[in-house]
Length: 379
Image: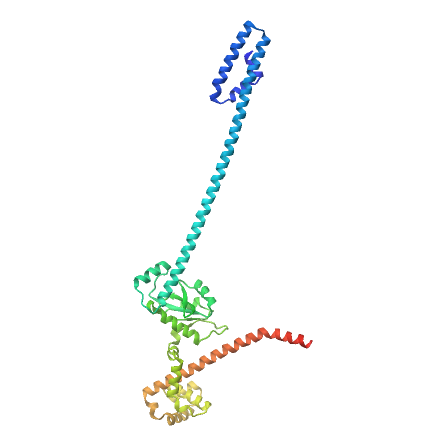
């Protein structure tokens, strides 16, 4: 009867689902029910015994269900709290990851800025006329990540906007400002082999200084700037860099144009009374004669007959006298004639560039002007 009642009322299943710590309570309830049934079987009716048993089991079930509901609430609360803790941990971890990423990004940005600052300081130190100690140069080079070479070359681009483009193409290029203009310094391991540099600069106009030791870096920059001023960029198919190595005599003669003018005026004074055409013809003949060493060589260079050269040389001997036989006079005359010819070439180059720029500007604005005039005239 006890087993039947427990089975009908579902007591057995609930008993299996209870936690191990509630087993003793259920056991005590079962003992009490058994004792009550035994007492009622002796002194009371079976109906009363069943009623008492059902009441006891119902009370126990109510206690069990209440415990189960309380357990479920605790489980829900615990799950809710665990979810909150998990969310907090996730937010904290995400914040830590963002903080680490931001810190790494800032550290990289700071390191890049520090390296750029060190590179600018190294450029200023190398181009300063004051001598810097080897230790300070080594420290700056290490901070800048730029290995110190034995020799360097200066590069002056045609426009400031090309500086960063050239720096991206050239290996170990050091960028900085010199005389108010952006320039570059590149290592020159072999001064006699400039083919790799020419290949990298192909199709670009740039003035390249001569290879110098680190302490003479400013000299390479100055002459590169001077060469860039003497040879302006000419747009066309033959755009290529110019090297100071190929124009040393030109730079030497034109390093001070007023002084070159004074030299020409001093030694070419006998030609001042001639007409411009006569003066030009005799200057060309005298320079060809000085460079060639004789009338046949001068005639070949000028594409004229040797007798023409001899006739002009007799005129020059009347003007200059016996000075043409003096080696020093001949040297001074050749320098004066060369400097005058070089200055004329520079003027012509600048004038051609100016005229080409004027034509480009006129071509750009002509359609607009013509259109405006047509509208004004009602066409």
